[in-house]
Length: 448
Image (spheres, rainbow, N blue to C red):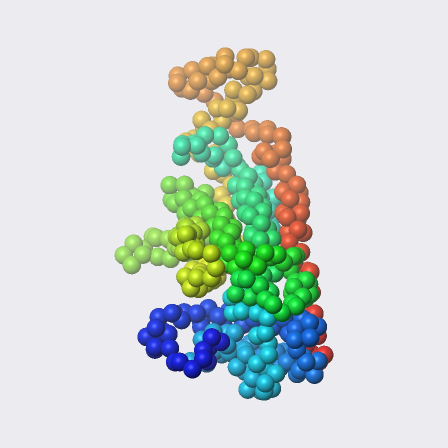
């Protein structure tokens, strides 16, 4: 069954080629599709487009389908094109002609748009919670190891003293910027396209404000043509946000790989979290971090994939857009997996506490020596020259005490301030409002 089918059966080869992986991808949209229909049918009844006696019957059956989806009992049958067709087919089979009325006032185009936006905002919600978990762990590790010094590098040359407090804390603060991008993506996503139909509106007296409120959207996409243009643009903005988080994880993974190297030896993990070699008994390879780095580097190419799929498409719906699901949905799953694995690994990290006692790091304290002279009244350029001469002539004796007190330095990590930034960003999403709206839809259907 196809929502667009009339009396002609499509060619089998054409059908298989154009449907592609859409059934598999649509299974992820099933809950969102039912929620959209719950809101849409209530609006149809209010607008006089659905008989008052049909509404409770439809709502109850939609709730049954919703429960089946959550319990893993829902499938898209062979020969059924997509999730929208499957839901409508089930309704018609179970309640008769009333099931055929749910498509009034909408097109598959705006139905897909609504499903995507509900699904994506749910995924962003989960991603944010998981990123918050990683952020909290990094902050915890930063505080725990705030006194443990390590080398800082520029040009991959030892430069100045750093600390594990700074290292962990840097990645925590990086995640706050990443979630700023995620917030922007959520705001773009959380607008209601329902009622735009095929992209040019409807002659039915639809109440788009009602469905906007019922589905918990911040606002609607007002212009019906732009609502359809949002397909692809929404995915591109979301892809950019995903790529930001992936970029942070990729660098974190790269650091772990480097610091696990025997020539560094700054950190270690239990043997069971590493892998071995088939011929070298001593090897403990950082495969988890290497796979994570590779996956996250691929994720950083996601915005380009979305851009290439959507570039220069003419106004209105184009079937190319179907392929966006095949690149975006797996990317979301991959990023969530990487965040989860990063948390798992970092819970088992051990940091070395005596790194800077090694003489190879003596010169790392040269800036401390220069600054000490400056504090005694020596002009900076003269202090720099004296310390430089001591190093060249082998007289340099490193002052191993580090006294950094300004905001964000070794001695003043500003952990509370960074946490406040993260809390402020998360408070702007409005997750509770969305969750309450979705729950209210299901509760209404339950009471019918």
